[in-house]
Length: 168
Length: 289
Ligand code: FES
Ligand code: FES
Image 1 (cartoon, chains in turn purple, brown):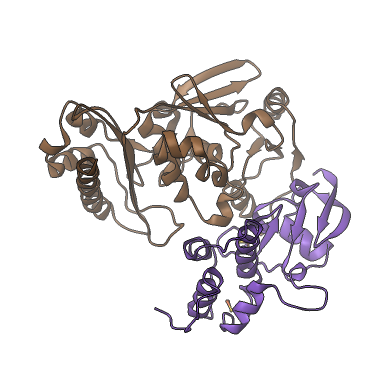
Image 2: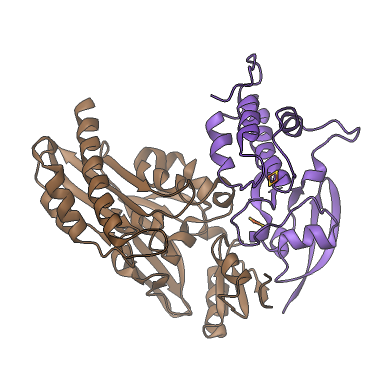
């Protein structure tokens, strides 16, 4: 059972820690680093609740070992809003469209959509509906019936259109 | 659901990785993308005492054109394969197959080589390797060998690898420009393993099929090559074939099973339809050019 020292950036802050080889990134983020916005549903890659952004990409943190993130830059849901509390576009849109109820699955969904929108914004574009809706297949939500989440995804893809809010 | 304790090493070279595998005498597991291995560890269905992480070995990554084909490093991420210009131009069927592997979030970590090596019978990439006639390069401290994908799989999650061996490359032979891509899969939800799937390519010259590579997934204990159908297709012109008859012969080369998702009979019936439809679609595509 080997132990390893890792240095990484989480939500813009440097962290250095000793981790056991078998510690998942999800457990490390929650228990060692204190980012309990990382939710664990299934712990084997099925539900998507644990999704975080590692080096710009949305990944399931229950399927990565903490030791593998040495040198990485990680964003959890706690790191998305601005310092003054202004929500990330994805968070605001989900709220506007009632894309959550109990909120258990929400951090994962937010991180998947934020990774895609941020990547598109960097090249001055919006993510496509196909990208967002396709990526949402990696998340299970037991509350919402998905319609609010889908509306938010469509709005993120087409933000300038006057949006009627109809699901069609 | 926490894995049993293990040691972890991340060697920087293939030699080092192979030496560790040899030393561990079967107690090691190779960690590539981890999207299958880590669930198995978490569920304690697998309890290696050491993980050999191959993500820090640069030579195991990347997609390159080689003589008469394309070489894919086993640790190449699935998301990079989807965006690969080389694959999009030369072998778009691989891109299509990879787009169906798992979800966006798992493709961001999962590797092409991991999926091909594991050999889940209902997975897209092992069947793609078999259909297109890929060769798998395997190394150990003892040397290097090449195994055709067709001979690589022995059963569900079972392959010809010895405990000290590592997959170090997958080479797909080139297909002529303008070849037709075949990909069909039926799954209960996007991202699920297929109930039935079909993948392959047809090369056509002067109106006649010169080369056919077709394989099923979810239709037997390993990827199943549709040998009889391939034979029937070669030398024919697409306009003259009877898709139904070829589909029947393609299903004859399968060994579908009953499981909690559906029955063997269902797989056979749907497989026949999928195959015939894929051929009809190919005929349409051919007429469009
Ligand atoms: S907790 Fe990671 S996918 Fe469910
Ligand atoms: S909001 Fe409750 S699980 Fe999605």
